[in-house]
Length: 118
Image (tube, rainbow, N blue to C red; front, side, top):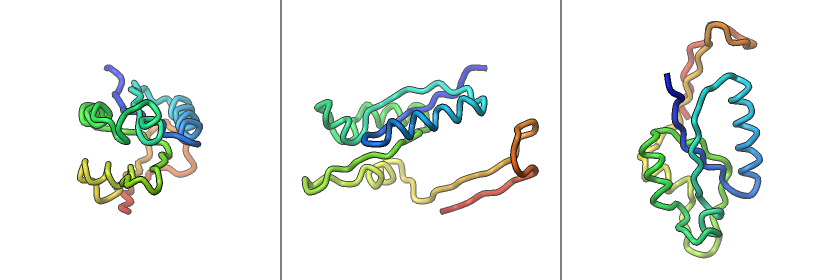
């Protein structure tokens, strides 16, 4: 079985550090993901691209999953929040967090089957 492909949006500011730490946790947890990094936010602007480049949106569409670190939205220049733009573009109006216990995984609690909607 091939690894699940995930779009990685490291972000900017503290984003890359937070993303690196998250990737380390996922690796230690045994997650076999293949990451495809893409620019977004200030990092994209600094590279001469749009705040959310079309190629980033296309990659998210293709993989169907994005792991996003903190992203700066420039202030005072007419930019819309990166988070709001992504939510509107992908029609994401609920944050759904399923929580399941996996057999054989070390965890504080077992037998969890929970969905949190925010």
